[in-house]
Image (tube, rainbow, N blue to C red; front, side, top):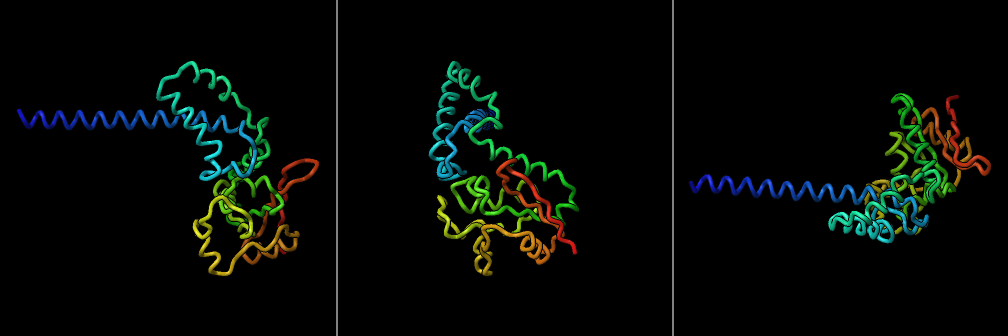
Length: 225
């Protein structure tokens, strides 16, 4: 009898803990979903953008607000927020250009694996939409390769640029810097782009830049002699 009681108590504890963990995950998911959608209304200021320090100024306060609503079942407030954030259109938001850029990167991710192996991406430092996508200056170089599956050339950040993330030798950057690699160009000409591409073993480079009349555009540089 005592053995059965121990087994039942153990099962009850496991089920209770599982339910609590499931509830926590659901609460977090709903709260984060609301916050991510609301973030398109945030002030588009590089100092308030990012996954760590920048997020403390806008993202985390909003997340805590929604988590409080969810945990306390404030349905009226949630429904009011729902009608506001669920129909947000990123193309008409404060982050319209960032949305266009990320959409462009996702389009490139659809290219074939052969194309990706032969092609690099180049984004000049003058494209602030990309390089100011986070207050952490060492985070943007991971975005284009992470989404497209293609390497970047001249993708290292400038060391003298202010950053909200002070651990500048993390993310593997210490290996680049110990090898003497660092950012060199604000902008590169076609010849400079192709010279670098050939050195790195690529046959073409897709340059993502901004045209004053059209907006963000891609320019394909074929670098085969």
